[in-house]
Length: 78
Image (cartoon, rainbow, N blue to C red; front, side, top):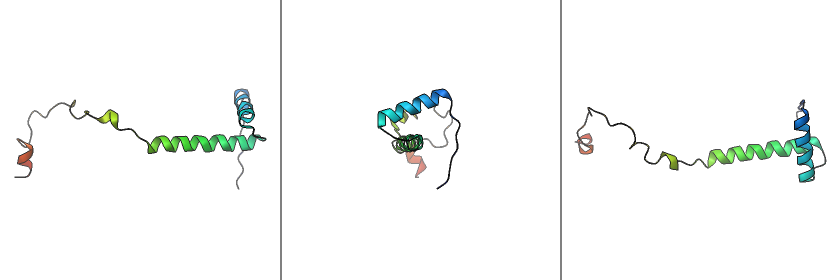
């Protein structure tokens, strides 16, 4: 297992201590591991659950081609 050394500012130390109390964790290293793991899981879940609802109707709002190559959809297959 590799080792990671970090420098923490006072605000990070306070937040870390609060997380330790809330979760009942005994060591700072355990608390940091839990925080990083949960952050990664949350980020990966957000990427997997991409919502494309806002894309609905987007093509309709795009400007029409003033000189289309084909007159209709049927001309594409003729």
